[in-house]
Image (cartoon, rainbow, N blue to C red; front, side):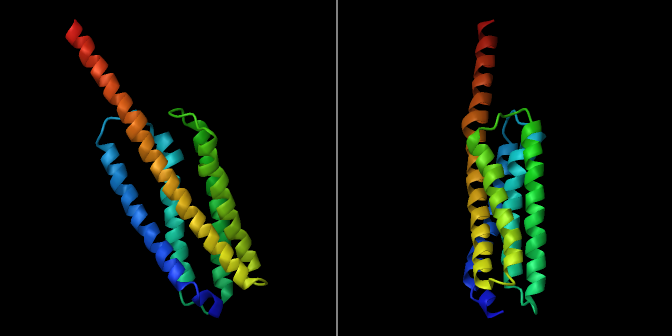
Length: 186
């Protein structure tokens, strides 16, 4: 599998980035949790958890693609399972987004939490099939899916943090100020 060996640097960078971003996501969520906010667990499951899952998939892909496999069959099987699992998980995210009542998703949310991840996971599943006939092209499909998931995760992490800071915390501070003013006026 000499074609796979050429991808070492790519997966070292993508895997390192994903691992660092997973850690950063936990730090940010810890900091946000210490502040007053009006979110629900359902919203976190719909919008926060998928971000960590996408980063985790990229980290896992980096490890799988760098392991010294004896046969391409094992790699194809893992890619297929991961791709189909990701498609299934995206369907779960759709259900979670619809059932939570904290935030009304807009087009960008549906695109970045459902549409683009669905494309990335489908590309993984298709690459698993294509690897037997078009090995080089299939590995580009896997690499593209990994990068796509990495950038989706970055976008969604930023979107979530900015929502908490610019909307939730500002709203909580405004409510606190209003309450203090009301109490002072009594």
